[in-house]
Image 1 (tube, rainbow, N blue to C red):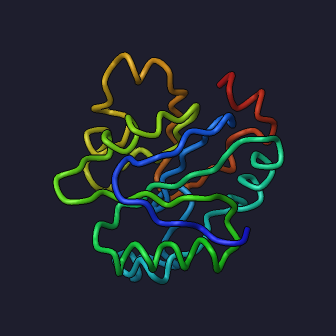
Image 2: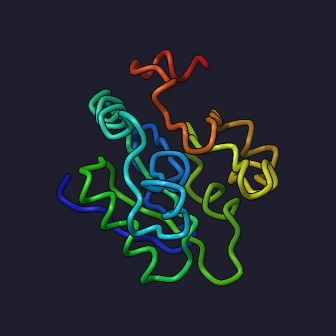
Image 3: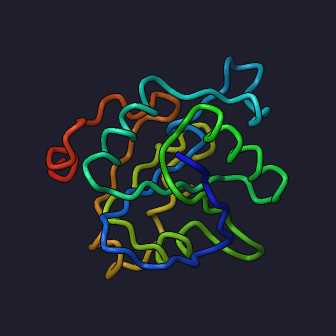
Length: 164
């Protein structure tokens, strides 16, 4: 991976590849320990997430990310972590002023959206997929994993991932 670009909001230039959008904090990144929970710049990859994402990318999908961070300096820290740990992918999206996660998802319209269950911050009402318009939601394979447990439970084969 040469670089990951940061994108504000839902701007996206369409490609022919299937897009997998992955939420970063809690889904593929976690604190080193509980005392670092609010120190996002010290987060580490969860389990085998980097390799699993690389395998999916090798099968022809485009990997994109969404962060919970809103301030550009904080977003930059998440980007640095993705690069430091060699996560594959092209773009890291974040919410601009007045934007919701659904705005990003509706703009990108991924084939697959992988995010955690947001247990520590209130559950499904905090998730990206929750408020997406029904006609768009129907086009997205939404996969929810346990917060801070990672994506190791998901299959390596894209065909198996799509049939979950």
